[in-house]
Length: 426
Image (cartoon, rainbow, N blue to C red; front, side):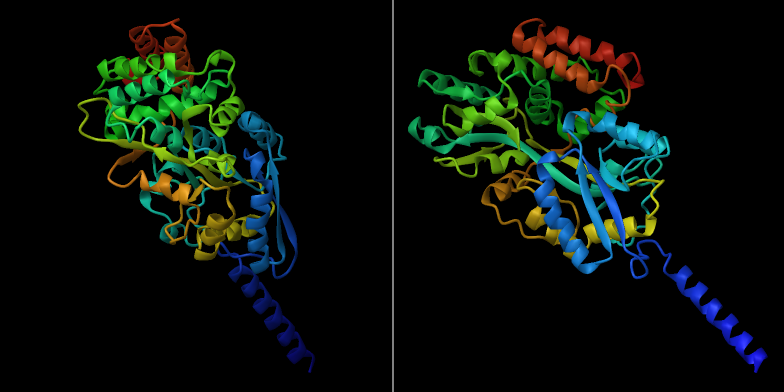
């Protein structure tokens, strides 16, 4: 009897161990045995309520996994996250910058390889994976959300002045002059928040001037010079905007620009899809224009940017639960929740089809049809050294608008700065 009882105990222990090991598969969860709380880091402080709704949908399916959304002030996210990770107090799961910034955190051992998250290969296209993948093909985050760039425009002012869609950059500038002559501010953008002029103006129009992704890769391979004629023309285009910016543009902040467009004082506004909700209740009709290409250009491009991935902390105490969450984001249920609850203008990157309800969000997406798309120019390669391509684009843009630099000087400074650390620029 004792031998039978001992044998039964051994068999039970073996079965328990086998079951436990079986539940350790990538993407599986120990949630059936215990309740855990994950901390999610983010730079999107504005998304607290939306992410609470998204994560609520996740917890309905996995009731023993709670996720606390804990964002950081956007401008401080990169430095704060690194300090947290270095100090061993980083979040379990977190928004990940695409390309160089994210790769650095992976190389430093803080972001985990997510290739074994269930559904990773099935739920994302190769092009959507690439912004969060090392050069040797290791994914350090799942694709999460993309944003688009364009030009907001006041349809009523356009109708009043008999304006339609500008055919090219010269046509666009003639529109700006007509709008100014009619007593309106042509463009709402200012320089007080320097990222605005860099990301939503310079990087908005850049693909049309440098030739989209193919052109960008030609610079990165050394086939084109970073102070070549296309770059000079791009800085010339930035300089040409000066007469059409608001009076006192040097002190106009991003929020000021939003207000100028929302109140009907400005007819157009370079910005991204993330701002759609800001203009939900304005008392005029508005739409989205694609950034115009230079006259004579054979192709048009849109900056459709891989904005946020979702990474796992290599030091998390709950890796299986994190993988369960990451797997769910790419599933049909997760993608549907993101499409429903994420702020308007943030687009889920899963291959699972979703329905976008907002007409203006669809207008942004429709800009991609018949046009090439690429990410913001600085992101793939030019953020990895100092001075970064981002900083040089920013300094050049502000320099040519204020008159401190000529377009040629801005282009030369751009190349010289990059050449300090980036071989293709030398």
